[in-house]
Length: 217
Image 1: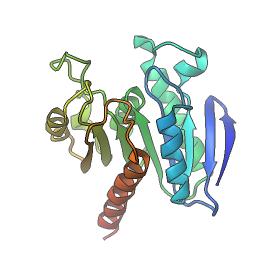
Image 2: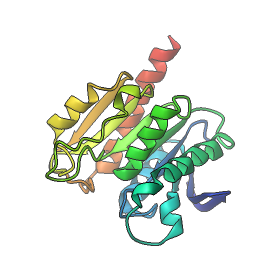
Image 3: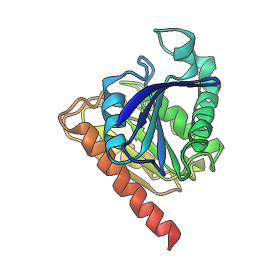
């Protein structure tokens, strides 16, 4: 496996290439206070590449514009456009399916992109989806869930202040597409737990394998 800087147009990040030519690819992006060098993203990207996928972990446009600080409330559309371009870049490299995933804010933007553009990606990987702000359970970020036609695999810690497992299970009922949830016992929003990256990748690959089998039958 090799890791190399990647830049194409407005897309910037790092490309993980598996040892053999990859048929499938996945784009991974970061949370609001982070970047594509986040330990969780690096670990998950390495596991995906070891499993034979081409992986791009990329910085969202707001992070490219400044090295620190949260995204601006009015900049989310630009961040979604950045993800759209990242998926398009991977389609020019990988001949097969291109998946899209993100941690927290990055996952929310990925899901919003998929809801507005159903054919953009074949499946979503949403790590620590920020269901609501901490201690504000009525401010749900699920308005787009009923429009989500893309299969979505969620991974969530049982100590995540952005939503409980029970709250997230209720929210998944709003999604008309196939979905699955892996709860990480004892993990917080950062999903820091031994073996978490390997579990994330197994969860997603099992989910997409079943989905691919169902859709081709």
